[in-house]
Image (tube, rainbow, N blue to C red; front, side, top):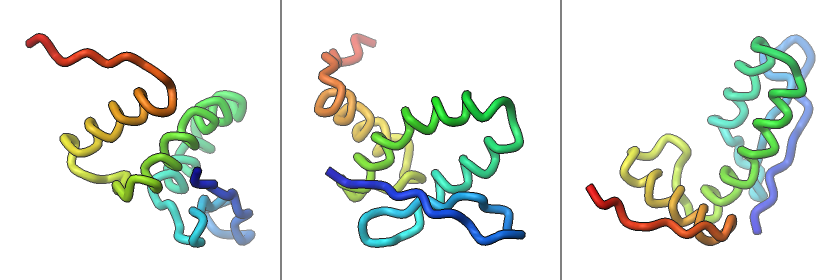
Length: 95
């Protein structure tokens, strides 16, 4: 299971927190999301959303799928995440 670490950003930079994977690679999508969320709403809401996003971003890292991949690719990974990590039953689209 992939672990995502939070690293304190340098003072005076726009990023109070940086998120990196096990290899120390910056997770740009999560880091930027966190920066934007610091300017919106209460910290408790941001922290709740972050708690939900961390497992998914870890799963993305494990699968080698980029956070900004094509929507069709992300949809398949999201379904796989729901099935494997959350134990959800996903039925085929009937449309």
